[in-house]
Amino acid sequence: RKEVEQDPGPFNVPEGATVAFNCTYSNSASQSFFWYRQDCRKEPKLLMSVYSSGNEDGRFTAQLNRASQYISLLIRDSKLSDSATYLCVVNGDSSYKLIFGSGTRLLVRP
Amino acid sequence: DAGVIQSPRHEVTEMGQEVTLRCKPISGHDYLFWYRQTMMQGLELLVYFNNKAVMDDSGMPKDRFSAKMPNASFSTLKIQPSEPRDSAVYFCASTSGAFNYGYTFGSGTRLTVV
Image (cartoon, rainbow over all chains, first blue to last red; front, side, top):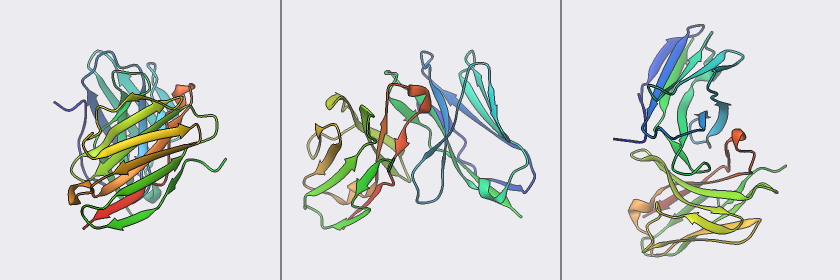
């Protein structure tokens, strides 16, 4: 079983739609959780950290469910510029060692 | 701040040649990571350093890969001899102890071994 699993997609949605991605992780001792965004042929960039109580940043909402070991990302009012691959990230056996999921590809169409 | 700086941006080399990838972390960041990304495997951690010391290199093929960090502002990843299966994008990332900010990645080195 992979340490971090994501649906690869692609999710193809119209502008303005709401879309949600889920991710599961295997290490119950993980303490740090993130969503990164990666554009084609670019480096991954931090989108947001994920906190136990859930957190929101504009149109983006992240949730953590420790009991079920999954993380979610909700994007409201999708923009064309949201088209990218979204990477779920969890720390491994060390706080500073991050394990990346394979990513979920999002395509937002006009 | 200039961010994490990697060089070269692209490298094409012949099988069997030595390849050296370079990274300059963000000033003040004491953790440095080398990742490799392929379509098949996604992002794989090869090795990471804390205060110039190797903390974990379990993901690095030791027979042909070596990583060094001779000072706080420079790291190298060397492949010798290179093989076609090493073709990938190699990313360097750094972070400080304020870990809730995650990592900052460099732009990557796209390596092609022919």
